[in-house]
Structures are given as structure tokens and as C-alpha cells.
Image (cartoon, rainbow, N blue to C red; front, side):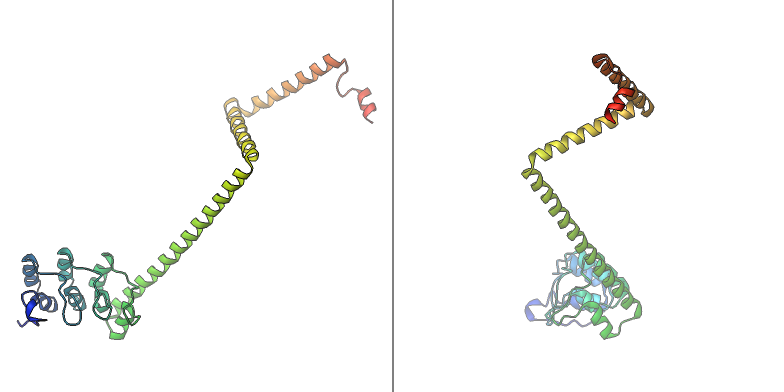
Length: 228
């Protein structure tokens, strides 16, 4: 097995890149366990994760990630590992670990655009399309939620300012609210019909007191004629 070296000073680490290309999991594992830099690059700025993802070597991608490989690393063209990937299981691994599906390289191309250009299998294309659609929907929902939160905050701020400018109104509203809640509790505790009966008794007592004080029976014929 031949390995491509980057420079003479990095010959001891470069074999990891070729192991990623070849899918040599056992050798890659030995190199990583021996302390090999998981983020070593080739002459195009590609890391082992780029090379493993490009060939669908998802197990090597997992080991690189476990040993500290940078999932967000880009090559000299601004490509992430996802830009070079065309295999369903590898795409799922990279996205599930936080790699963004809609990130663009230096030419403004997303992973989906490059995948279509390379002619990768249809399952990978459908997966990338579905992930991009989810990303767009999630962005729209997030923007809508932020707008609603801003509108609610503005409404609360306006109400607070109105209350500060009208302290008497705020006090009357609080008294009215307190009276309303107390009345509701009273009705619930005593029962509707009992409260109605109590109001009738109070009304009759009021009429009796009025007759006792004035000596005139309320709503008598003489009063009605006077009103008329």
C-alpha cells in the first residue's frame, strides 16, 4: 500500500489520509490511537474527514470524529466534508453531528448543487433535497416565531407605558379585577340559586325600609300618577 505524502516534515502523519482514501479502518484506528493528528490536510486543504466522506467510509468518519476531527473544516475551496459526500449513511452521520446542509463554498455552491453536478446516486440526492427543505422550513418557522415574540414584547411595552401614564386607570382596573374574582368565588361557593334568592330578599328588605322611612309604598298608584 503506497501513501501520498504532503511534505517531508509531515511524513509520519500523512499515512492517515491514504488510509481514509482506501477505507483502511484498522490502520486508521492504529494511527489515531498512536496520536496522529485527525485534522491533517493534503495539498488541497482536505482533511481525512473530507477524503473518507468522499468515498463513503462512514466508519472512518466516526473514528475521526471520536478522536477530535473538526467537522466544520473546509478545504481551500471552502468545501466541507458534506460538499464532497455522495453516500446516504455518510450524509446522515455528518448532518446528525451538526454539519449544516445549506452551507456554501467559495463559489456559492451547496452540497446539493455539487452532488447533482457529480451525478451521485438518486437516494443521496433525494436525502440532500429533503434536508435542505427541512432547513428552509425551520428557518421560516424561526423567523416567524421571532417576529411574534417582537410583536408581543412591543405590545407589552406599550401596555406598561400606558399604565405608567395612567396610574388611576391601572388602580381602577386592579380593583375591578379583584371585585370580579371575589364575586365569582362567592357565587361558586354559595350556588347560583341561593345568590339569586339572597338578592330578591335584599330587594324586598330595601323596599320595606323605604316604605317605613317615607310612609309611601313604592310603586303605588299615586306615585305612578305623579310620574305620569
